Length: 85
Length: 289
Image 1: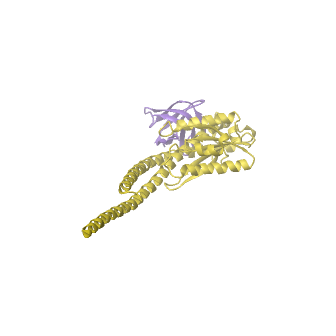
Image 2: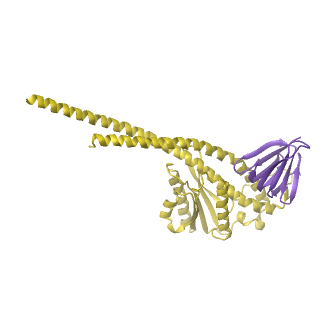
Image 3: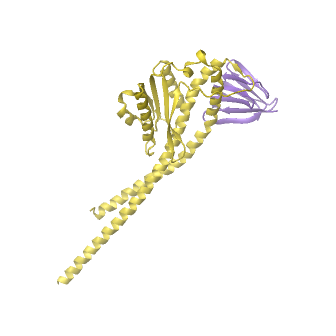
């Protein structure tokens, strides 16, 4: 089962796709989110979000600044103020 | 009665004005499309932030709520943040905004409150200064950048929150145009600070874990929410400006066309009259011989 991942900035929706796992730089440490993660909310620090498209694949990194991450029923949403692709 | 030459010059000048208004209309139409797309692209972020805010604000309430949510406990000093455009040639957009701001200000003054203004954009400055010369506080100039983006919203929000923390005002209202269509832009007044308590969403779902804590997240979220509100207002302003400008320039182009037609008829009549007079003179001269 894939994880639905969304990355949104004030200017536009950067990503909306199904992936295997996403590692988010939370303000109290990095955390990985897989499908079926418990509801969770965290602020994030400036750093790289790592997106694993499939299991064992090379992660794609996206630099984000300022924002927070929310894990709900419909997957992971990262609201970032600034994104460097 | 103007002379033939005067009429000709007049027609020429109206024609060149028409060319300018037509060009401006086409430019506005192209920019409107882009501004509308930008406004739409910004919506998901604002929506998400709103829902998260609602679920958090329901949990953190009472004394522990941050100042940005709970307010200063007084409602004496009001700040009106008026978002105007930087450029003119957009019909009644700015005067409608100023009118809405003035109504709100007079209403508050009548209720015995003190009112101060914070002006974003160039165009509202002069008319508001005329009525409320002593109440114009700070302002933010957006004319230096081509299209105001998140950085500008960030700067405005930072200044407002700093003013709030210094105790310069108790309540801030945001006055901005809401874009409906190219024909209708509605001036809207919204409370900005303290953040109005959103309606609590009933999340009967699972218990959400928070990291660091609910309050810390909310404290970080509130300034961000204010920023997003201002950013949204800037986007709406862009779309409204181009929409209003398009309509106004369309009207101007049409009026210029009508004027040219009227002037051309007048010009032709004058010419014909001159010819007739000349003929009469020649005939009269021939008869006298």
